[in-house]
Length: 625
Image 1 (cartoon, rainbow, N blue to C red):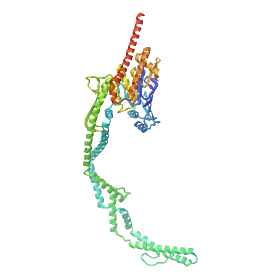
Image 2: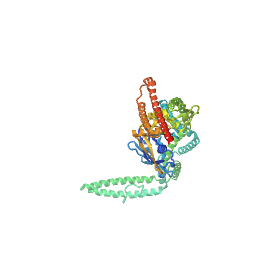
Image 3: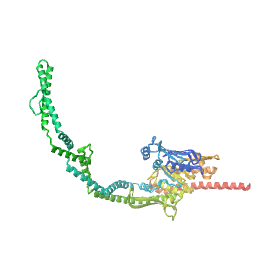
Image 4: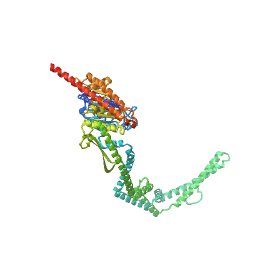
């Protein structure tokens, strides 16, 4: 709901604040005072296309700001946060600036945002029905959505199932087309994988084999160096050449043994030396064991050129595998990992039944979707017939008895996200006229009344928080004007309604009445907005009835306001059960309408008579002069 609209430097409006609230708010004023600029400002706030010519002459930019109350967990709040904006306890601030240079800027929740974000947000908040633009139902998709909402449960359940299956059907169809369209590429990939796996199988690398072969190759290539090192170490340990037995003189083992004996001989006198002697014995044992192992290693070393050649050839095979299938740092382990992944991928590529399985699932889903689409079409056509009848009844009351709305449901073969249907709302403005699209089927005033009739019928099924009607009463008067006012008031029972009007019969039904006041000092025109109290409303209604505030018009305005309030209260009162309502339809219902029409006709007639009398008196005075 819009709580306040602030407009600066737009058209003739220099600075105006419009306090808006729940229920029906009407905006009136003299011709040219700037009422249309209020709708223009709302359109700007909704992200509509901007015209720099709307900026007030002499100013650099026009600014429109709106303060709205929205649900904290609704789509508007979510989109606001996505744009980086904030809400203050459910209050949302929107702003649009239009400069004379043509630059347009938007702010959402205190943050700068693309103008398109305003349009996205407004779809959930405001429906504008103007003389040229019917922004509520401007696309076929929106008309289809509205018809589905009007149909209610008859469509909702099947549509939810349909859209879920449709998403799966599109995914399966896309996968099937991808598999079928890339069959040649998949075959080439499979062949390359087979060649690689055949090579790996032929070489048959073993885990850690590359490391073991590298070590063996190093040993075979440096046998003499290793043998010399082992002999030198053995001699240093034992004092004997490798291969001899016993303990030589001057070896490390003999020196350690000498130390052990010296320590042991005095160990009886000191336990510390006894401990040293024991440790020296352990060292002597370790040296003897090391010397034996070194001697054994030296004896095992043999030059084997044939074995060296075999090892080097095997290493070359493994290196080639690693270069083709793995990272060199990973070695044989990388090759084995690639082989496992390649085998799994090959199974996927070689699954000859996959394409057939996808085709089968796709066809089964399509069959289900077509059955659901058929049920949706039947439900929509039934709802369209009901919608046409109910709107026709509303149009009759709005002085368009020969007009008719046609909700044309066109069914094709393509499975779209909403089924196989498209919906087009057509209007035949009078008898014999061919139905035409809404935007081309009637004049501006007629179209606004058609949209009012639609909104009244759709109010319970597809509500919008705020509806704006610009001169919905153009070209009507008398009883039709009263019926427009009554329907606007009825619509305002469930949504916020803002109406720009020239008719007192419409304005009298308002919960709040704003008037645009125009002043002209000869050079600069300014407009402001004033909220009227009861006395101010009577004065404004009198002006609207007669063009001047005469006593007769003032009395008529009082009567019109009183009768309109009584009718609005009666319309909003809880309804009696159908049986009782039917029983009293001919008495109470018809009588109330009759009283309303009679009161309105009386006001209009008295106003006309008053004006005629004044003209007559004025003419008499001019004749006498």
